[in-house]
Image (cartoon, rainbow, N blue to C red):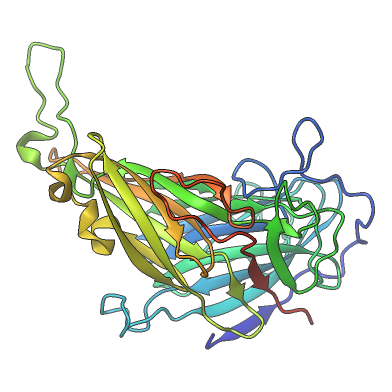
Length: 388
């Protein structure tokens, strides 16, 4: 970590909701003990936030409870040190961290654009940017920012608190109006354990005494082979085929964004994870390989490995890919995006989506699946947060 700034918000508002919180649970009243994109948690992770001058990110964060929610957020800039060169071992991520604090009233949603942040100004007219109750001062990210946002629920003193009240979404919006939206990944906490500053991700059905939901054992990505051509569209009228994809000029590219589960915001140590993958085509032919994630990664699949290109498996167009960290290394959280093109007026459009996950790193697995290597049981990822 090279830079660290603190931006204080409305930390003096209201009283703590100690003892009266309603925990994130299923309809039957059972606590959720896995990462989720559907309900609230005590940590929410937005794996991809971007502001590059043509594409901005709208962040939405909500308090789903009926008491105040105190929040400590961390922007992590994963842009390469030299923005004019491709990322790599000689051009690592900046890993600069900017943190800020918020206070959300009961059932309060809030939003902001990454490029603009949000001021504390309660006079903003209804219907304008910044209208509504401001939760605190939110700094803008610098242009060229590509990285993640992680928000942790805390108490009024800044100590991590297992309130399970945070839910989030992110919308990446291009200047021409094209948008791509995904749900933030929530990590529910054990409501019976007061965590310290090292948040242990080891809460599972077999380990109900853990602190926060364990990270996935396997991340599953269903996608087109990178650069595969879409099926041509045709018209039912008398004009005949409509050449939206004539001449094989409509490739589909998939981009993967990966964040390590373990992060040390307290001392600033970077986290590197090597991911192993197996990828299948529709005929069950498969390839394997690996790539590394240093702090934060976003990349087109073909940049990670030639195994993801159509020619690698005889021109097949669809793939099923399973990703797992090598034994002894930390877990990851991920989202994906598709970039589609048409040859008709060269239109492009983005679509973001959350990924399937299977198992968790703490429980391990009793048998391998599809020749996956067995994970090491009792693997615990840790998020270390500063408390002042």
